[in-house]
Image (tube, rainbow, N blue to C red; front, top):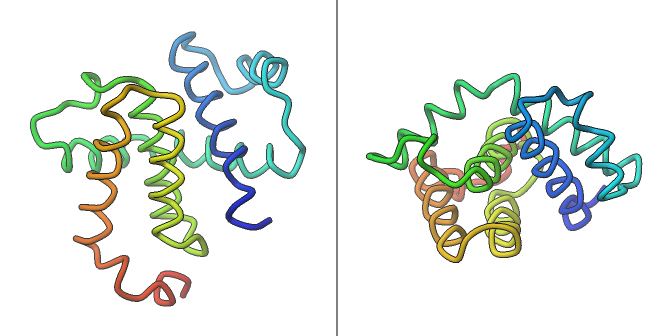
Length: 146
């Protein structure tokens, strides 16, 4: 699957995580409703579910990273969708090394533009850019893949 075609997977993961957040449901409880409102191909669903699983597995670490970058903003003060978009992007930055950093950031910004508040894209771009630069992720993409 090319990186361009992963956007539906990211949006699917965002929608499922959002449904879980607002209903306090499990992935299994929320999945049928998300699939009913937004059908998705099996291969795209598989990648989206892998993102959801990784977010749930590493949520504590993600909260620490996001709060560390956003300084005085606690994660519970952020719009829910911003938090979820950031969690998905950080999962890809940290665990999906085959995806170029610029693609991950660009996708997160474009998804924020479409689904979140007016200021979200700028906020998300800023956090992801600071993290990537501070961890030298732009310097050598090939070393990310090793």
